[in-house]
Every structure is written in C-alpha cells, then in structure tokens.
Image (cartoon, rainbow, N blue to C red; front, side):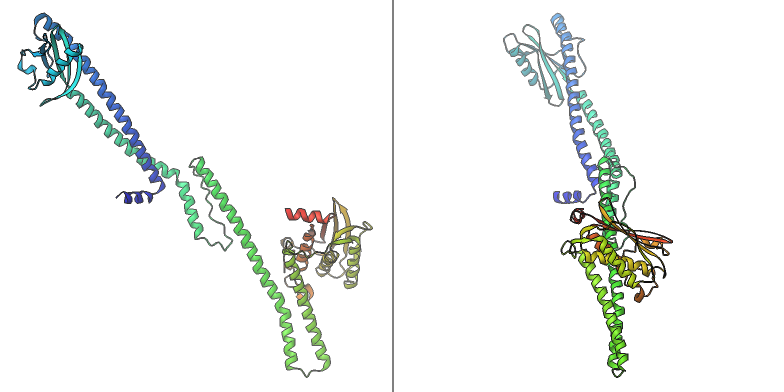
Length: 488
C-alpha cells in the first residue's frame, strides 16, 4: 500500500508534489498551533475555575464559621462536603441538602485527609461517577473543620471542544485553500519549466540535418530569478546548438557542392579520354595525322585532369596543415618573384599590357617561393581571363605595418557585388556560362587564398566597374605569424 502511494506520488507533476508538500508542512504547523492554543485555553479556563472555587470557599467558610451552615452560598451543580478532623480523621458532617453530595464521596474524603496532612489548600481534578469531570478544592474553614468544594468542568470541556471544532474547520479550509491556490501559483511559476520541457521534446523530433533554427523560447514570463537564470542558460544552450548546427549544415553543403563540382570537373576530361579511346578502338585505321591529332587531345585532357587533381591534393594538404604542411619556406626575394611572374604573364598574355609599379629594389622574406609564384601566376591569369583583350593590368610591391603587400589590379568590368564574397570558394565561377577550356576549373583563387593563409597572410579584394584589385599581404616574420595564427 505504502509502495503504491510512493509510486503515485513520484508520478505526480512537480507543482502538485510541491503543493502537497506545502500542505503537509502547513498541516504540521496548524497542528502545533492548534495544540498550543487549545492547551493554553484549557489552562486559562482551569485557572479561572480555580479562582472561582477559591472565592466561593472564602464566602462559604465565613458562613460556616458564623452560622455553621452554607445557606445562600451555594452554586448551581456544585458539590460541598464539610469534614470534622479534630482527631486527625475526617468525619463527614450530615449535609444540609442531600443534593450537596454526590453518591460517591471517597474522592472528597481523600482530599480532606490530604489537606489535613499538608495543612494547606489542595486542588485536584477527579472523575465523579455518573457526574463527569470535577475540579475539587479543600481548605480549612477553622481549626478542625475542612471544606471540600467541587465545581463541574463541563463548561470548560464544552468551550475547549468548540475551540477544537473551530480550529479543525478553519485550519481545514485554510489548508484546502493553501493547496489549491498554492498549486495554481506553483503551476504559474513553473510554466517556464514546462515551456522548456516542451521545447526539449520538440528538439528530439526536430530534423537536425537541415539548417532550420531550433524553437528557442523567449516568452518573457517570470518565474523568479532561478527560473530566469535557467531560461537564460537554456536559451543560450539552444542558440549555441543552433549555431553549431548551422555551421555543420553549411560545411555539409559546401562538402556536397565540392564533391559535386569536383565530380563534374573530372567527368568532362574523363569522358573526353573515353571518347578518344573509343575512336582508337573502332577507327584504328585512320590516317597517321588523324591519330596524332587525337593523341594530342588525349594528352591535353589528361594534363587538364592532372592539374585539377594537383590543385585538389594541394587544397587537401593545406586543410590538413597541422599534420603535414605543404610549404617549403626559405629565404627568397619577393620583388624578384613578382618580376618573374610579370615576365611570364607578358609572354602568355601579350594582349593585356602589364605595368610593374616602382617599389623596393629587393624584399627578402622567408617563404615558399614556388607557392608564392603560383599565387602570383593565378592572380595575374585570373585578371587576364576575366577582362577583355587590351585591358591594362598593373602590379605593385610595397611594405607597410610589418608586412609585404603585392597589389594586382586591372581596369576590367569588375566583379558583381553578389559574387565578391564567393570568388574564393572552390569551383566557384563568376561567369557561369564560360567554357572550362577557356575559364579553368574555378580552383585558382581558392588555392591562392589557402596558400597565402598558410604563410600567415591574407588576400583582400576590392572591385567596382573599371577597377578590380587583389592585395596579397604576407607578414615579414613568417614563422611568428604562422605560430600566432595557429594559436588563434
């Protein structure tokens, strides 16, 4: 039975359990208060009755001493007994009225004997057979005469009983009101906890694979400082989870887009290689010059696929730079690297006039010259491929704020604002319709940015119609910059 009650109690909601606990505590408090109040009232009424007995006996003692009787000094429902104790043994006098004595006078006699022994007034509460509880008092009227009076305690018991009834009813109603009102207040105060529990249940059924935001509660209902603190922590946790899920979803989308783009980029040369292989299988008797043309195309497609795979491998190694860095830093002259890249650009893109702005004659840095040259070639090639023939291109080298800067600018049509934030994404092309044979794979800027980041630097882009500028910034102290970037 007790086990079932405990299980039922544990199965109740927190507000109900708190209300019941509050009710039980209030019941104990009401019991202590009621007991104390009842005891005090009983003692007070008993003291009043003792005072009344003493005052009555004073008048009765005077009547006995003067007239030898109790005439006119009796109270309704009281009992009186007069004892002669001249020889030490109480002898009951004959009552003036048989109604003055109860049927059983043993308690009166015992009290008279006690008064004679103690030689002072004696008070006792006795139960008289057939009459109920009485308060007895014995006092000496005159030497050798003892008066015993008995007052009923029925009125006291009735008053105490009524007080107990009033207490039970009042405390019961107060307890009921306390439980009901307290349950309502607790339910209102715990409503934020219920909201948070509802949110938590919603999260369990929420699709965490999409980028939708989690249902964070900001209802503004107050439940006290503790609940407010819990709500703030809960909402902060949900915001953190939400941000983490958004980052993960974005990373997964980038990964899926990367895989799809990489597959698409590799599919084209592979299909070309497969097509030319089929030509050789089914048209092996072609003229030698025809076979040479097909072989040249095969080599071109294989080379293109090799470049793409090299770029993908380099990006993968840059992403895992903590494990294996692809850089081979050494002392090199950045100005010389820029001049070499400019010379190569003039040879391969003669239709784009290139200007190298005056700058420092030499700038020694500790860097990977091959990778930095690759970055410069990519940026210059990007300027030529995205601008019309005849568009001037300029290169400038400078030093400022402890870093070397290489500015590559062109006077082309510029990059649309919507594309500026994504030009460094892998496989992203500003001109979606541009052919891959002419436009490349869309990895050049991504590779350039990753290589410069590996050097502890950055690439900044500013563009508007008629002017596009890429600025490469490399710290003069490569090792310190890379260590700082790694700790950050």
